[in-house]
Image (cartoon, rainbow, N blue to C red; front, side, top):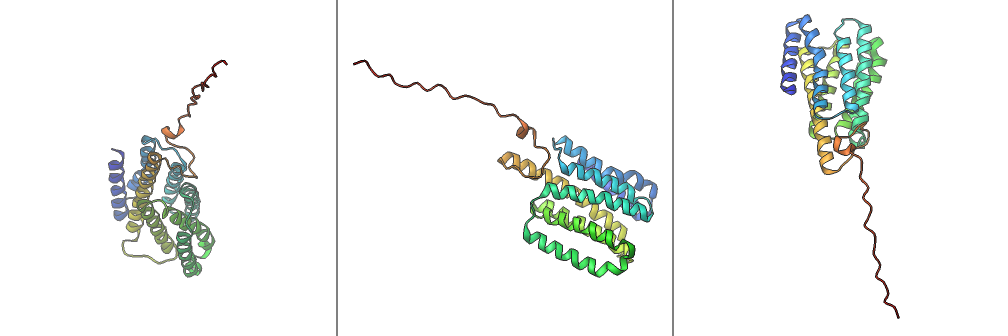
Length: 232
């Protein structure tokens, strides 16, 4: 029941953003990450991706405050989230890294002057963001889609900070963000559960499933009885 409730809360948040209901946003948005954390714990997953959702929740709360300092604090929390996701999703394939890092360089080059004082913080954060998206591309299609949507959502935020806004800008930001969290989380858990079933163990995971954590039992081999030589 947790994931359907997440969908309801996400829909309420998107509607609240569209209608500019600030009080409702303060209730709905901070619930997104905790609901997915609860779902992960329900599935027996306690790893660095869970920590990433905690950072994202702190960032969500900070970004609800309409202030540049709060914006920078929120960006710092989301930087922590991206680093955690990168640790969980590694290793990164070179072809994915090359494509996303090229996009990172072009986007920052085009927006640098428009961003003003935010240019350097955005440069640092967006590198972690694109690295996360590149790492996500190597996990599964669902996780790759989540990483790409997270990038789109934050790119829209960056464009807004640069004074470039699309129609229904804030609604697009929230819709792509909620979808990104859902796809990253569910896709990651699905990938890990499949890995446990097939005996594949990924690096970068802070904890394993209950089956993988079970201690190995040592069973000594039965004594070998050698044939005796008959007496002469």
